[in-house]
Length: 201
Image (cartoon, rainbow, N blue to C red; front, side, top):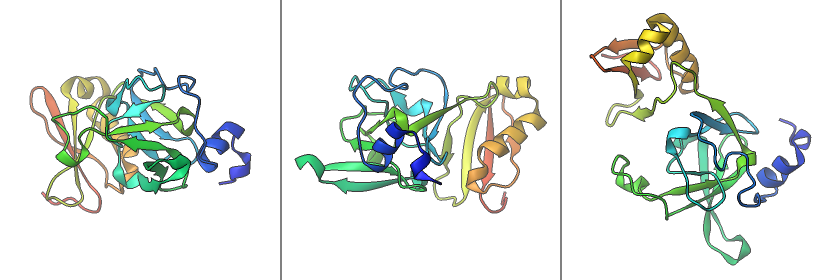
């Protein structure tokens, strides 16, 4: 990665810890579904499902798509005490996280009320496909390496089982999962179990 070849504004924000002018970023009012990736290295950072309108002028999210892809550091610059959010892979400064976000009963207690305030220039939106859009990835408690994805039977019908398995496998390849297998097909929802290293049913 040659940082010197980055667009000037991205370099300023990501590696000189700058900040976009509020309400000027391209993703402030973005409503499209998909995955927001690091604009420098492509790591998955935030899902559109976690995005909300905070009214602050920057894209805001309740939680990262994958906690392993971000790093949090204390930031005492500017005479303030804040928590900086960085991309773990490339070290790019993304923004800050605050404790004034919405309360969502679906989130664990330790992740309630968070507002990840992120600069648009540090993000690239990877649009959701018509088959796998709107899915969420959740680690299964007490089952190391297991990840559960819930999708609709409608998505399965439109994509076809083989095509959907292939696309799911590509989407979550970063987890080191083996080829995805659809293992449960109730009437309305399909649960997919991904295993990082091996299947163990």
